[in-house]
Length: 130
Image (cartoon, rainbow, N blue to C red; front, side):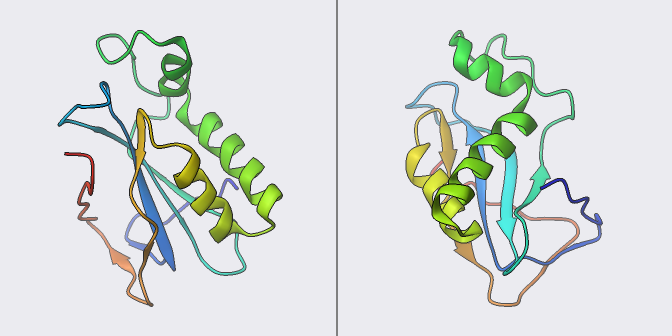
C-alpha cells in the first residue's frame, strides 16, 4: 500500500477525498488525502499535505485528531488496511472507511470514474465540506 504515483496522470476506478474539519459545523476544511483504487490493486493514496503531516495547533485540541494530523499517512494506511482485511475488498474497505469516519474527518462519497483518468493538475471539489 505504498505505491508511488506519477504526478502527470492518475488512473483510478473510483476515489474519495478526505478532509479535516476543525469544527463539525465548520464551513472550511483542510484536504488531507485522495484515496482511490483500481480493480485488483492495492489502494492508492494521493497526499494533499506535507510528508511530515500538519501542525494541529489552531486546528484541534483533541489529542486523537492531533495525532492523525501529525502522521496522516500512518493513520489512513492502518485504518484502510484494517477495513480491506475485514471486508476482503479494497472497494468495500474504502466504503467502510467512509461510513465509519464522518466526524472531523469528512470523506466524500465514493466517486466512480468510469475509465476517465485524472490528468494533472487535479481539480478537486470538496463535496459536503462547505
